[in-house]
Amino acid sequence: MSLDLIHQLYAALTPWLGISLLFLGRNPFLSPIRSIGSLLLAFFLLRIPVAGWNGFAWFRMMEMNPSFTLTGLLAIALGQRLSGRELFRSQDWQAAWICGSVAALVLYPMGLGLTSIDPYSWGWGPVLPIALTLISSILLLGGNRFGILLLLPLGGFLLHLQESSNFWDAAIDPFYAIVSLLVVICGFTVRVR
Image (tube, rainbow, N blue to C red):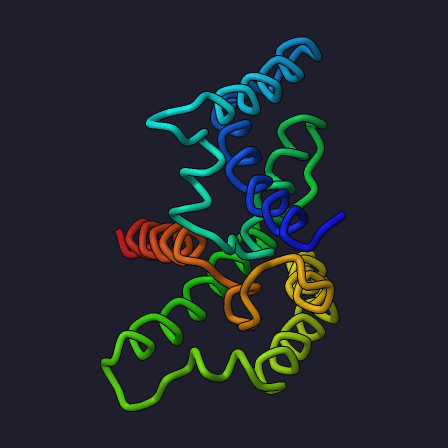
């Protein structure tokens, strides 16, 4: 299997997981037929050509390197929805949103030139993978399951499953950043009220 095909398959996984979750909805009583039908419908809808490109290609154009963290979170959400079991507790989800928000606030404003520091360049060195391993270890020692998920960017990065060679792209992407910030802001707003 060529490396280009691996990159394309990985990049297609994230939109398929997200659209499958939308089709499954929040119904706690899913029949196996509806579950399989929703997964297949999401796949086939992403295969329909629009202006010469299928849905997978359009998503790949918007985000070539979906983060392993986002892909893992979508897979866990889909697994919870299909199995009816709680794979992540509320504190695990909360850690995922807080980590995503902090990473987004460190990476994007400074990376866009608001300061003279460019944290995106840290992704080419050994510091960021070591820092993520340390954060993952602290979460795991505290009993937080999100620590396990934080190991995915390390593994995916070492296996070169993405086109990017920057570790930031393995850990966070704009979709994960935006959702994390929105969830943290909404949670903070609710607590203040």
